[in-house]
Length: 460
Image 1 (cartoon, rainbow, N blue to C red):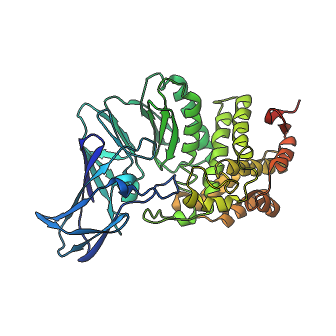
Image 2: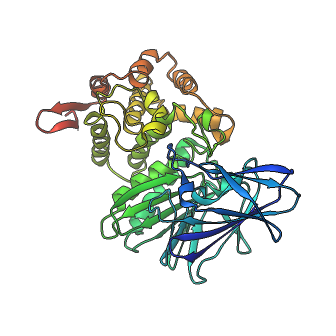
Image 3: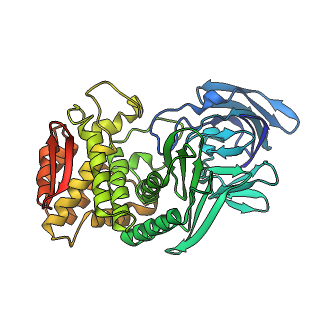
């Protein structure tokens, strides 16, 4: 498949898609309704006013048959060209923006695909000012970006602007890049050093890196913002405003998103293997995807020496408050709230209903990690769980289910964890006392002060 993108006017992308039909008859053309990293329907087709279809010089009728699906009738085996415009003004890490200052595209938003062509090789040409620079994990060959499949293409965001900061280094046999738009004061030696420590530690901790390159992409914008999205070979992080100190937020976000290289990009829940962009895909293991990553993302900062013990305890307390102050009495379990992401989205929901897969999920990961460490005197931890998950399910060998994660954790623990799963994951009980008991054994006091709220400190 061949795609071309240009910007004929501000906020609009002009897009063409050309492909060779395999058979005569009806061909359905789809645009994703959701994107990886955000498990809710977003209906990108609302930004696409119309599509026109051609074979040679002849226009072919194309009809919309669903909210994000079009159909045409192919009467000859000859290349089909589709032309359309896309309204690009979604200013976050999962959207697309086209204006005189920058071109930022998440291709999953805007590139249509004939159904059944998801594994087809793709070529992409993008027109932008000659004096601009670009950043993406896509491979560039003679002014054409190439991807092995449509799936790879839409998992590779693109950034172009007059000036893009860029720094590169090698680690674990892979090439890493820090690239971004924004003030040079953001991309400091301190930030670069932190990213390098985070990457080195995570690669050593997992023992295997499934990629050969990775791009930390940034957009430091004018508006107050904090958002990141994971991809197999990159992450896009949007942070703002420009005049605030971004360092602390960026290192935490970068650590979280980089661990997704393993925990979703290559170790994937069974219902998401492969991604089916045109349909809602329910799965009850979102708490593993995001909760384990939230816990470890912060812990990696301490373990890699980027922050100290006191700073880590403050981060941990912040996450604990986000659960206990908001959701401790919610009626749903983690698995139920994972399923209901598609129903409730990521904003507020019915009071007392949902827990956060990020913050309660992180508490479960913390509890599991500490239980394993206590039993084996630190000789084992959640590290062995994630390494075994990678050994069994990494590199998209096969998808996992809840029972698989439970089984591997119990193999590492060398005993059943039935009560832990029933209370912490499958139940909706208040976890403050169970967590406080585990932490106390490590010399950390978790308590609730009537005036100050939740408190976390080392026991002297």
